[in-house]
Picture 1: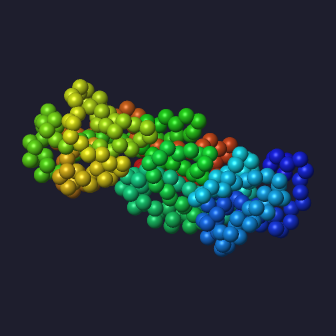
Picture 2: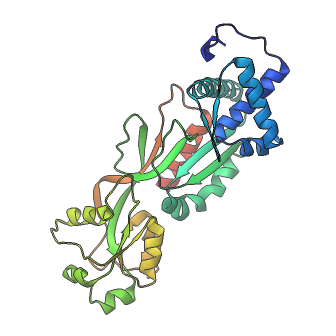
Picture 3: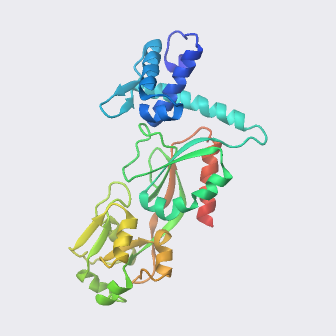
Length: 311
């Protein structure tokens, strides 16, 4: 137990091990209620076990806030050691010939790529790796890997993620798009100068910490235009919502080819100013903390995602 910062290692009883396991689950979820669900306990029983563990270790492991819990520095340190130990143990067991890859993975994705690309493919992953419990989360906020128990992130970015490992899963190209009716009503086909009379639809959360019109300006730079953007606009925090607004004649949105290709092929959307354009290094990236030895379940997920992207 020296790795946990204790001067003298206590003898571990069954109760100690049970309380440590309860701590590991609660720390992973940062929720006593979710830990209780997984452990088939009440939230008060989880809280009692954690309190007993804190007493035994003479350490405070959680900050108990009104509606949530956060790990203390000691709790964070102990959780990291325990998680690494459990991962190593799991890997050692699974390395036996024929042993099924298993374990939990928390996979965080931006909402639009999750809905339009990821989720429709997940049945295949589940069929191949029935032993992996995949916890899929979506959102737009920047990820703090210290306070969020996330194994892998799928995001739209330029691939620059300091201190993290990133792998480009798919390139992306973009183009303005609108419904055929909107294009006809505004005479847009082949006339980009008429964009000035249109309503622009912005995805304000295309990637982290951007200006509301950043994606449109990326397209202007790609086509070498210095035109000013129209002053009339609507904003959304998801690309699929701006796409839906465009389909329903609300205005012109930036479309990402990987997400809207089928809608263009089906005629729901048109590209009034030409084909999709590549934009620097922007694309869909897999991002995760560095691992001395990547868990097999994470390697399996990454390999599966690469296969899906190449399909």
